[in-house]
Image (cartoon, rainbow, N blue to C red; front, side, top):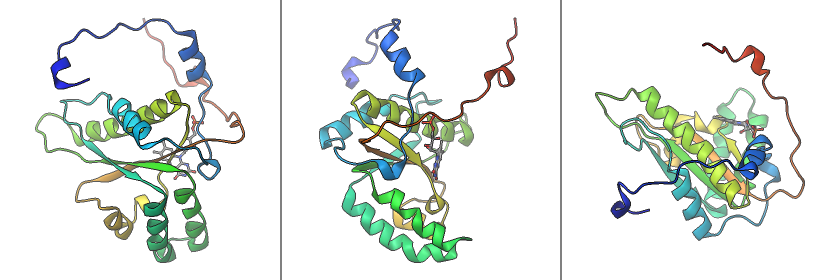
Length: 200
Ligand SMILES: Cc1cc2nc3c(=O)[nH]c(=O)nc-3n(C[C@H](O)[C@H](O)[C@H](O)COP(=O)(O)O)c2cc1C
């Protein structure tokens, strides 16, 4: 899809039992269980291209990505380690850094609201969340498992500076991508009878 495709008629949805089944049984991975193979550089680019096809009010594209390979995440985990001391449970905060470094590839999704008279920041942040979910679907389409994590370092000012976030930006998620050796186990799902109000 390029700018020259603007205005091109896109296909209408067609029922797909395969897609329906995959959505019905999709499940995140435990981050620490994600191992190789991960997506190649070309596959990461494709995952980003698909993931960024996400609704956002006003076409502001109020998010950006940082693709983190193993080396950059190892350095981040090292730099975050002394910051764990400031957390209420330092040992636990240090331990969860293992989730940051396990997967072959990670896409950091940064909510980056754009000044707008028309579109509230909340809606721009929702779009960043939608991008995270869409990246997970895109990675799944290419045969990879994912884990969407934030953890304490997404809310620590010093850690955010190390990640390169600027004023007004927030971490929407670290999308860890790789392959699971064992199938994930089902978890509780919401009782929709108490969540849905059908109205005529
Ligand atoms: C915004 C957001 C942040 C999350 N942060 C964490 C986290 O820091 N640590 C964690 O263990 N799980 C975290 N999770 C939960 C995992 O993504 C979890 O694997 C997921 O909710 C499982 O959902 P699924 O079974 O539908 O795939 C987060 C989820 C979301 C949506």
